[in-house]
Image (cartoon, rainbow, N blue to C red; front, side, top):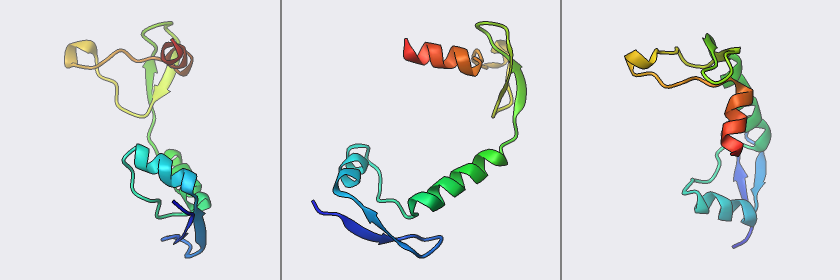
Length: 93
């Protein structure tokens, strides 16, 4: 497999889709990127900047936190909410 030159759908610049990246994308079942690295980063930043955050309380430590979804109580079918620190600790375990 050799490197491919692709054209960014946003800025029109060409960028290299390396053989290593192609293997990674294929292993994850992903299609080739349509945007260059800079445009992907800009798009990601814009998505998170406009995301509405909601106040919540961590079910593990009781700390106040914010989440990008409207929290529901467990009675309403919601799941326990974790702050960033507790989430990272749980994920690492």
